[in-house]
Image (cartoon, rainbow, N blue to C red):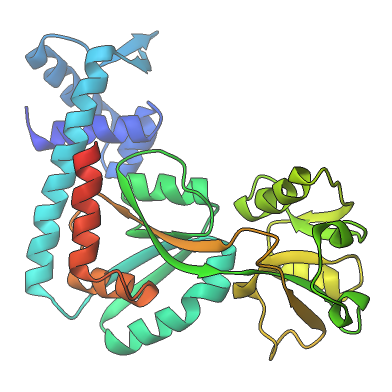
Length: 311
């Protein structure tokens, strides 16, 4: 048994049991992976994967246990390499962040600017992805952090760090009747057509649930996943919208008014998601603290330790 074999079975699992894809990801060839897999199974005395017509079709019960342990071993080996790289180069490296469109557009730019100024030798890559896809990237080790406003799915070993909270606002075109009236009620808002986030998105679901609790069913004329699209539709008079205060800037959104609605809808929370078992470099801790000042290195380490103890 060796680290290469353990890395191979982890990659096969990650590639949904496709050895060809695993070989491409590992920059090797399919026969080599198949040979090493057979050697490992012969040494263990049982199959890690079941096969049909010479193709891997499933993971055996014992194989699931082996892969779970192998993933931790491979991760720890990566941590050792990361520690070595961190000691050799404290001023350089790469930081890969997966973020939803809203977070990448409104939350991260100023943080990235300040981080880049402090760490000019660190190359930052931002990948836009829906939360489920971003979490798959985190689990596979292709990104270092995930930034999202959604509730991350329960998958893999990770820790969620809430960083910032934002009240909801109702955005309306300039001159709209709601902008000059009293503090709005749900019943009043329900009389207007709405532009909203898709119900599958946390922000969209929370708005719909707030109306449903009062037995109200406003008309949604447009659903979207982008705050920019929603604001544009409101500017064009298609309806009003409930969004996070994060996405409204009175200096840029000059065609819109924002009406406070924190009394009607739950807050939006920007969250960082970090892997529980991977080594975090010093500049990664600094990036996290820039996202939420209460997340100092020691606070992050306590959160990781507490999460690990629960599992």
